[in-house]
Amino acid sequence: MVHFSPEAWQSCFARMEAFLGRSLSERQRADLQQFSLLLWEANQQFNLMGPSAATDWLSRHLLDAVPLLPFFTARAQVADLGSGGGVPGLVLAILSHPPQTIHLIESTIKKARFLEAVVAQLALQDRVRVFPLRAEQLGSEGKNAYDLVVSRALGSLAYGAALAAPLLRPGGAYLALKGRQHPQELAEWRQSPLRRLFQEPQIHPAMGEGGGVIIRLLKRAVF
Image 1 (cartoon, one colour):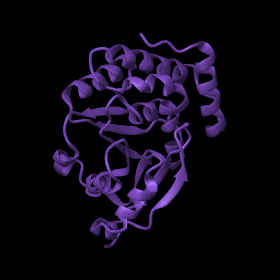
Image 2 (tube, rainbow, N blue to C red):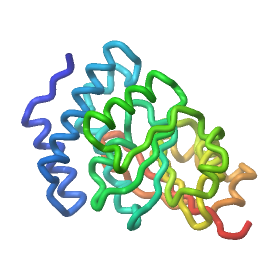
Image 3 (cartoon, rainbow, N blue to C red):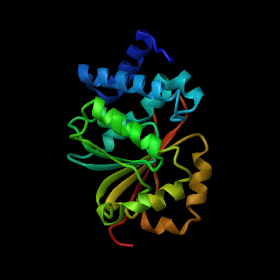
Image 4 (cartoon, rainbow, N blue to C red):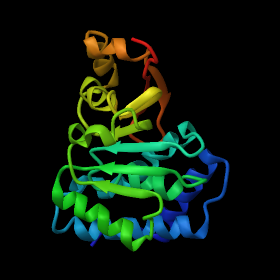
């Protein structure tokens, strides 16, 4: 069983609060801890997160979601592509203030069922919905429906943008969490025909200790 010390949790919470410029509520702290407990319990049966993720769960993985929050607008409709174990989507649902509507899109059934269980146990049904299917299968329900589409460890920038484009309303943004190899992905992106659907990429620093960035692609209103 993975165990995180109170001191490690306090350091994680302090970094979140310093970035957000506000205190976390007791419920938010408790929900993050309960989510983590449920995730690492389930990880003993299902491959939700790689085993190495436990060593930097509080110093990187949970923190990765936090810099996405300033991009949220009031009452935004948000989709998390390939939600996996719930990062960043569930973390965003817990931390967003005021609460945002977040759809977790995860095609692997065992992972989707885990996400549904966490949503139920944390009583997040008023703000989170799980879609146990691929993004391409959302059909008319997802077309031009979202203000923001986020992803982490989904594949190349071009691949993620191809999935996000039909889901985003014109003027909406695809926010991709990327690691140190992002310059190569950006170079490949500039050769992709998909680039005409979006404005020039904007690069923002991430927060976790992984040297990552957020690549922001705004969907054009007219192509």
